[in-house]
Image (cartoon, rainbow, N blue to C red; front, side, top):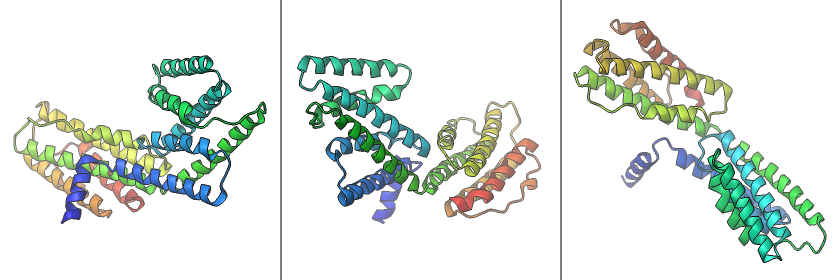
Amino acid sequence: MSISKLSDALNKYDQYGIIRVNTFHTLYVFICIFLVNFMFGPPYINQLLPIFGMGIIAAAASPSHVRKQQIVVLFIVIAIIWYICVNLVVNHNLATVIVNGFLLSLLYWLGRKIQFFAAIALICYLLGLILPPLNVSGNFDVYYNLIVMCIIYLIVIIAFMNLFPRVYYNRIWARAFYLCLHELVTIQRTLAAGETNFANSKHLIGLYRITSGLTQKEFTFSARRVNISLLHISSYMTALRTQILPINSQALLQSADICEQLCQKITLSESIQADYLAIADLPDGIKFSLQQLIIVWNKICLKI
């Protein structure tokens, strides 16, 4: 009973499961990094581990697998450049202030067009202050070795990130698909009851955002077909709501039943069989959209 309540609370707070998958992904990468450090004890770990850790955390909020890697690489490159610049003048207080001020100003200026730079500016500044300085002693090969080790660490981390099962991101999409479809069921039953005062679809935008982050080519193509079909159905509901088109209650209830059956199959990750032509009073475009939803789901349900 308590597990059911916890699951309901998590679903209410994290509707699509993005936070749970990202948390699991972040912990997985951290564990891999600590295992590599434990087994091999690579150099410069005191300087690089906090940078890589913050880079992974900065990427945790993204629902896109590829976008995560891009954020990690960009953050680490900027943080390493910042750390080296600060380390070059670490023994001169005035120069340290000038360098930090210049780099902060540069990132905030870049952040006017790309918000990511503004978001990481303060984090990079703090890392530049708290990380232990390198003992250069006039030998600048230390910086070369640091950059080489950073590249090696980065390759290892990207490799670990790519080993993470991408099926979890497909499940995020399936959850968004389920919620969007369930929302359409409610809208159709509301319209069939003669009511037009209801909220617009809010999960359709979330579904589009999640689809843009998918990486598997075949799955992404199918997901986009679903998005287009859902948009057609949602547009038709809007036309009924504004009374541009007449409302046929029986046809809407039949359509809602098919969508509800599909929702149940999405929950079970099973294929569905349905008679699309039985809804004679719906426009051909809407019947075709319903047909596409079921055809595409039957094709990709085993990949969820």
